[in-house]
Length: 106
Image 1: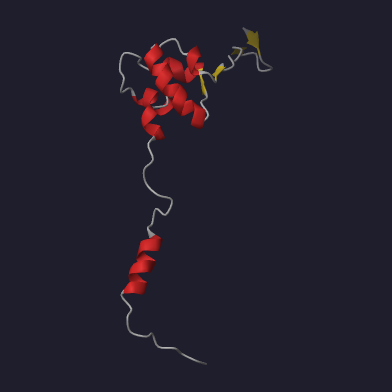
Image 2: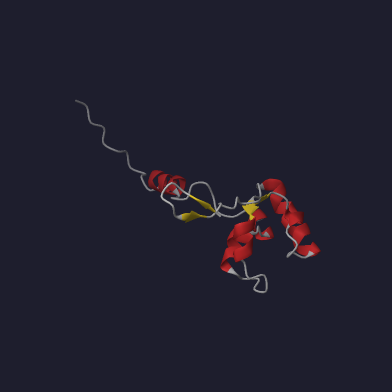
């Protein structure tokens, strides 16, 4: 323990240790690691020892675990890029207008 200029005790800050490899998480089973490796081929995996220490490893639905540890479901394609479905709205408008639209000249 050291002291700062004001004379108060100051603890040295511990630096986070980053984990970039799924194999470095001993709490995961070999089966879990194999499934997760497929996800980490597509998406970068990175966490640190602090967040891993917050996980209740006995609970597979632990909220922090669900946020940090990848899931194989992340590889399932779903949704679409046009979240507001503008293309469908535009097509519907075009198909519902069988009568000519007025043309205004200035």
